[in-house]
Structure formats: structure tokens, C-alpha cells
Image 1 (tube, rainbow, N blue to C red):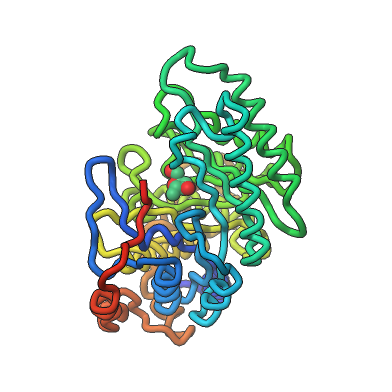
Image 2: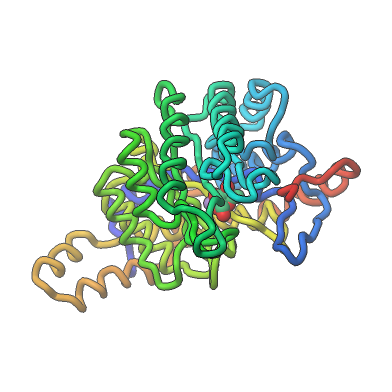
Length: 393
Ligand code: LRH
Ligand code: MN
């Protein structure tokens, strides 16, 4: 695609200006694998410093105004004060992630545990997270359950689904106003035989049982190799049950690498489905979030690059010549239809995004500007002592 028609350019620029990408507080903390968690200098020691890093990403990209929290990793005594601090920094507190995957009591499951008291404890945490939402003004409660089994016969798969449904119903019943419950699925890990919410179908079925404000989250790293993720996007959009994304990328399993790093073409195909459904607008209600772990690379810069990768995939999707595509599809011109899509994908949108940033009063090169800002050196010098934030696993 050589030159972009002025009307197309205007449409694309306005859509990109309105894009909103939520960054995860835990991406700024130490993370790793079971083999090693490599500590990095300058890593935040508390939710306030994580928010300062998230605000830095927003300052240089202009499209990351909210930060997702994870409880208890981001537990504080005064959430209203935390929310006020975030506003001062130019961002807002976003999705509240529950964590029922790190307590010894949850060895055989949290909300699906055979033991009633353990289930009550887990449900208690989910309800605590809704209290946090009330305090932070967050709309979404995001639930991912590590629950599952490792050996055939370990537990009744059906009874675990009954237990899960009961916990979801109680949590859903606690929501008020426009609050939503976002249910995230994952094929496996840490469980290696069954996972109680293993795929989009299971998540979708539970959401249908709950009600309108129960929606599915697609974490791009949570599928079996070869899964056509954009089909799941198209299906859930059509069903009105796509609540959000956890963007990251992977070569093998739940690698949690930078979004678009391992498979930029998949990210483009996903954003193509979003754009075709006119679902990019914040009003549509999809929470576009990153969920990543920067085990070896500088974290703030990696999140900035990830935001840019999502912007690039979105810009390419917005450039698809829909008229030509539909005409080719309708006439059964398979190769032309594919060529129209590939033409958009092969378009270098970086000049357009540089112009967009200039129009937004930002440096056209966010990564360069961030590096020149000396932010990393400053936090390395300031954040000495104390306990660095991490998964605490
Ligand atoms: C599980 C998951 C989930 C989060 C966690 C940090 O793999 O994707 O979204 O709670 O990562
Ligand atoms: Mn996730």
C-alpha cells in the first residue's frame, strides 16, 4: 500500500488516538521461571513505584492510561490513596486480578477444592477483590484459576465444575453498578492433567450461566499450539462475550513474552477481527490488557515496546481495504481476499504512528525518548534497599 488516502488516514489516526492499552503492575516487578527469577536494579518495591513505572509507559506512548492490579501483590491499606496517587501520576487503576494460586491451602484447588473450608477461603478472597474494586473505582474483576488435577482419578471433574460454578455465582452476585466479572481460561500449567477452566468454551459456558456482565478474557498465551485464536475472538465478539485480552506472545507455551514479539502476524489477525467488529472503541467495553513477564530484559522499556507492537498491529488492521476485501470474499476470489489482507499487513505503519505521536505532542520515538529520559538510571539510584516486588511465589 503506497500512499494512504487522506480520509483513510484521518479515520485511522482518530481510531489510534482513542486506543487504550492497560499495563499490568506485575510486569514491572521481578519475574522468572521455576529455574530462576533474575533480580534487576531499579525494580519497584511497592504498588506506588509500580504505578510510577506504568505512568512512565503512558507518558511516552500516550495510550496506556490504566494499570491492572493483582491482589495481594498490590495490597495496600488505603486503596483510595493509591488511586489518588495514580491520578497524580496521570494514570488510573484498572482491572483487579484475584490470586487464589499461591496459598498452600490451594494445593488441590481453590474454589474447586474438595474441602469446603478451603473453598470458602478462596471465595472470601474473590469477594475481597470486589471490595478493592469498590475502593479503586475499577470496573473489572478478573478471575484466572490455576485449579486442576495432575493425575486421572485425582478428583471428580464434574463436581469441580459444580464447585467452580457456585463460587462464580457468589462472586457475580456481589458485583454492583457496571462492574463485570472477566473469566480467563488456560490450557494447562500449573496443573498438568485437567485444568478446570481450560478453554474458551468452558469459560463461555460459565459466563452464559452467570449473566450479561460475565465475559471471557483471551490470554494469547493460553492455547494449545496451532489454535486459531482469532476464530475465538470472532466467535466471542459475535456472542457479545468478549470482555478482554491479556496480550503477550509465545513460541511454545505460556511464555508471557512481549506482545507481538513471537507472532506479530497473529496479533494483526486478532486486531483485524476487532476492527471488523468496530470493537476497538473504549465504549465497546473490551479491556485491552498486557500480561507479560520480563524475566531478562529491562521491564519499563519492554512494556513500551509491547504497547508499540499492539499499536502497529492495530494500525495495519485499520488499513485493511474493507471494500475490496468484502468484494473479493463475496465473489469467492480467495487469493484476492487474502492479498487484500496481506497488503495491509505488509504496510509499514511506523511513519504514520510517528506522525500520530507528534500530533499527540509526544516524541515520535517513544523508546528513544525513554532511553534519553534517564528514567531507568534514576530509579536504579533511588530504589535501593527494601524488598523488590515480585510474584512472591
Ligand atoms: C496466568 C495469568 C493470569 C494472571 C497471571 C499473572 O497464567 O495469565 O492472567 O493472573 O498470569
Ligand atoms: Mn493472563
